[in-house]
View 1 (cartoon, rainbow, N blue to C red):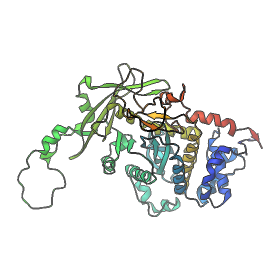
View 2 (view 1 turned 90 degrees about the vertical axis):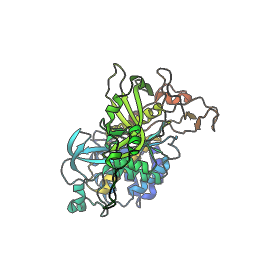
View 3 (view 1 turned 135 degrees about the vertical axis):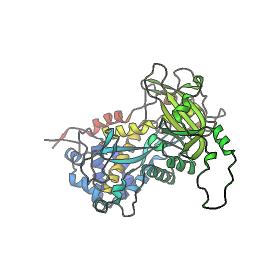
View 4 (view 1 turned 60 degrees about the horizontal axis):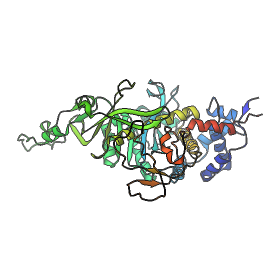
Length: 486
């Protein structure tokens, strides 16, 4: 006799899914979705389609296959409705979209998108699928927004594999940075309130990606490599003022700057190493579960550069551990305004790891990547359902009292007191505050896949961190996994 998940649905999950019923022509499909989500939330060792079908009552492997591969429903439309549901209750302001990619090791060559490429899950080049995803992050909330499978150029050019995997005929090869910019455009069209973007060095070191952010007038704090190219502002102005030699007015017009007017290109690590030791500032950007998170930071205003192209002026940010503290040097680039405080840059730089913790929660708690979808539509339907499950978990968080967001905190603070994220203060009423604070009524607090933040909820009277996704799961298992026997 196999241990089965109870046939009785979770009332809160049913209530959450009821508005999405309109996407399914047959009630059977909507019921399969509820049963499948229940299996993803349950404490099961194997969360592939077969593993869930074996454990969840009133669910079969064929029903899951039909839901993911055969039933007519629009995963993109369902995802848009999910986002519309979250916007009124899971946005506190100061929003950032964080971009990253996740990989799923796979064997064989027929599963859609599988190629011999870098696999972050294994830390080496291997056969895997790679998806580019975007999440929304603010000082209180974090939830998934969009995701798309990355197809290598070899896949896009292979007509037989495209046909077998049902890849849309009009889909053409796109690099990961191009997919990321496309998702930013889609997020804007969906009405997600954000003006900032975060990403790791895979995107920060890509000049086309940074140009795309500038063209969209989006602020960013992105990771870069130690050899990231920069040009000093004084040298750029000096080079631009040099007179050009006389030339004959023949031939095609110049498309690149004259070599005389190109300033020297420097490495990021060399520029920061040349700064005065006193310029480094010790900043605590958050209180974590193990204490204050503190590092030393330094920011220099200069231009980013690539070959003979000089980009706009911005911030080159360095991070290093304190004396006796473990950790490596890190580097970031930001196009934010010259008046941006260093503490603000430091906090924004450390929102990006939220998406990595989200991948860990998804893979360990919801079986993200356990189901090997062979078809293009099946992969994106599976991803949409995973994001639906994460969103439902977010909405199970406790409701705090009204909190305040400090817009312009001082650049330093007493030891052990976090400057960022924008910390709460005493709140008496909503509305503008004469001290310059922005009062926001937040209905649900806690990053779905973000870090715990004990200091974010001082106005609620809490003394412990908000629940993580894993702890929410543990409580839910008591109601989902009942030991019902068949």
